[in-house]
Amino acid sequence: MSTATPTYDDLAGTWTRLHRLGHLQSIAGWDQAANMPPKGNEARAAALAEMAGLLHRLRTDPKLPEQLSRAEQEPLSELQRANLREMRRQWRASNALPESLVQAQQMATSRCEHAWRTQRPANDWAGFVENFRPVLKNARHEAELLSQLMGVRKYDALMDRFEPGMTCEQVDRVFGEVRQWLPGLIRQVTERQAKETVLQPQGPFPLAKQRELCEAVMQLLGFDFDGGRLDVSTHPFCGGVPEDVRMTTRFREDEFLGSLMGTVHETGHGRYEQNLPRELLGQPVAEARSMALHESQSLSFEMQLGSHPGFIRQLVPMVVRAFGTQPAFEEGNLQKLLTRVKPGYIRVDADEVTYPAHIILRYEIEKPLIEGEIEIEDVPALWDAKMQELLGVDTRGNFKDGPLQDVHWPEALFGYFPCYSLGAMYAAQWFAAMRHAMPDLDARIGRGELSPVFDWLRGNIWSQASRWTTDELARRASGEPLNPAHFKARLEARYLG
View 1 (cartoon, rainbow, N blue to C red):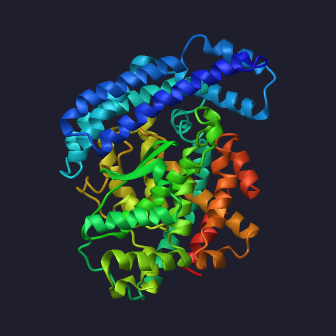
View 2: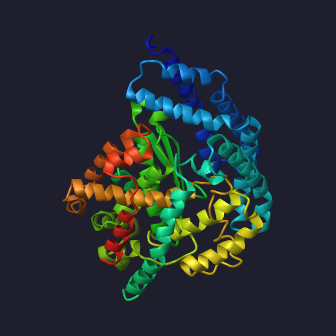
View 3: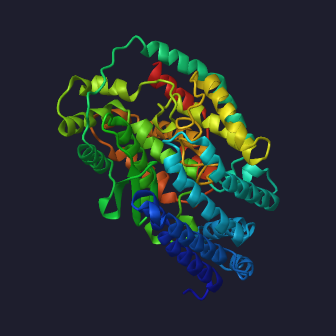
C-alpha cells in the first residue's frame, strides 16, 4: 500500500472486494439463465437478493463519503482520478436507493423473468402483467429516488445507469432525425431487393453442427476460450466477468443464420470484456464505459464486419464444412441473405435497416411507462399502433412476438434499449474512423485480415475502459462525439450504393 495515497488505496480495496462478490453474483445469474433446473428458482432468487443487499451495503458504507473526499486531496495520477470519479458515480447512485428496494426488485425480477420463459411461448400477456406489476412499481420508485438525487427527469435517471450522462433530450433529437429518414429508406431498399433472387438454405441444421460452427467463428473472431465459453439460454446474452466471459445463444433446427449472427454479436461483447485492462481489473475505471459503447462492439462485429463481403468469403467454407454443399451457401447468395431487409416482429432477428425502428418503438413506450404517463394495460395497443406506423407489421393479439419478446422488461432493464441504436451509430463511426486511418481496410478484410479491426478497437475502445467520459472517448477514437450521420451514410452505401 502506498503511503502517499492511503485513503485511495483503501477505496481501491473496497472496490476490489465489490468486483469479487459481483463475480459470484454474475456467475449465479448466468447459471440461472443457462443451467438451473426450474425448481431452483425461488432459492436462487432469494440468494441473488441476499447478494444484491450485501453489495448495496458495501456501496453505501457510511464511511465512504469522507473517504472519497479525503482521497481527492491525495497526490493521485490522472488514471487514479478517473477511477475516483467512477467510484463517486457508483456511490451516489447506490446511496439514492434503500437496501429494501434493491432486494425487493431482485426478488421481483427473478420471479418475473422465470415466469416469462413459459408465459412468452404461451402468449400469456395477462399472466405476465401480474408478475410485472411489482417490477414496474419498484422501477418507478427507483427512478423517482434517482431523479431527485441527480436533478434530472425519471427516465434520464434510469438511462444513466447504462449510458452515463445521456438524456431524453439527446435521444429524442437523434431518434427524431432517424424517424424522418428511416421509413423511406426501408421502402427504397425493400423495393430494390424485391427484384433480386435469393435462395433459402435447406435444413434441417443439426444443433450440434450449429454449435461447432458458432464456436469456430468465435475462434476466427479472436475469442479466448480459455477465458470464456458458449452456452444456450432463452435469450442470448454475454455475462460473467472479464476473467470468465459467459456467452449464450439459442438454436433452431430449421434455421442457422440467426444463431450464427447472434453469436457473432455476443462475441463482440465478449472480446470487449476479455480485453479490458487486466492490471486494473476490480476497479471501476477498468469496467466497460457504457452499454452504448458495449453495443458498439457487438454491432461492429455483427453488422459492420459480419456482413462485410470479405468476412462472408471466410464464412462460406465454414458453413459448407458444417452442413454440406448447397446452392444457398454460394458467396453471393450468402451475402444477400445476410443483408436482407424485411420488416418483421422480432427485434433480435431484425436486419440493420429495420432494427432502429424496433428500438424507437420500445423507447417511445418505456419512457412514458416509467414516468407514469401510461400504464402496463396501455402497452399492447401502443405496441400495435407503433409497429404498424414504423414497420407496417400487424401484431394485434400476438403478445409472444410483440411486447413479450424481450427479457429487458421482466429484468427491469429500463433505459437500456436506446443503447442498441446508439451503439449501432457508434459502430458506424468507428469504422468510418478506421477507414480514414487505414484506406486499404476493406481490401485487407477482403484478404481475410481481421487483425486491423481488432487492433484498432483494442487500442481505441477496449483498453480505454472507463478512463474517459463517453464523449471524450469518442473524440479520442474518431475525432468527434457521437455523429449519427455516419450511420445513415453507412446504410445508404451498403443498401443503395
